[in-house]
Length: 211
Ligand SMILES: [Fe+2]
Image (cartoon, rainbow, N blue to C red; front, side, top):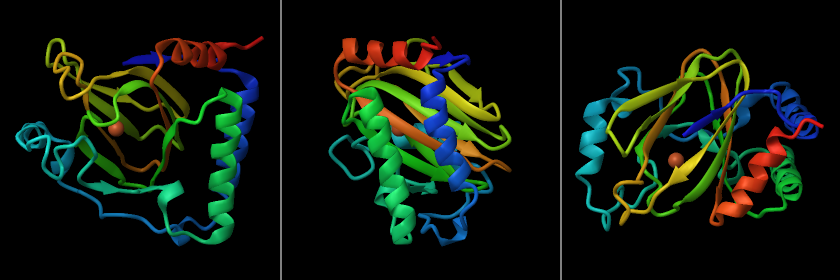
């Protein structure tokens, strides 16, 4: 995974910040969340990573999706209609800006939100993660498939942009196990998975273009 440092494209930031300003002005308790907090941090522990790896690929929980979360994919939530409209609007705006149709997730994590270890082996490809953290009290964690080292990337307040490749189940040396957690910060992630490398590189170029 590569962490990109700001500045980011001002047009993109304006669109994202406008969404965030609106989002943090609404009553978030009306957003229907999935799961519950994991105060012992079981689901982002090394033990849980090893347990998760034991689940066969053809069994529920082994396909690549997260198994436990506290949060919600905003586009999949059962939230008030006016909220849903705005969630769809930012999704459409981003797709238009990137010229893509690949927004995979639009996750909202409340305080103490998390997503357990998973590998997206069923949705592999080149990815772009645009995460917003209110105060920087959260992180993204992954296991480097080349040396098995576990790396935790601490969020910074504001926008955090990471890119990388998530391999398929049949590419063990490129399969990337990952999870995320937040504490006192609320956290939003727009996640894109792009099948074509060239298109992904062009999207990254757009993000970093500040002219
Ligand atoms: Fe994921």
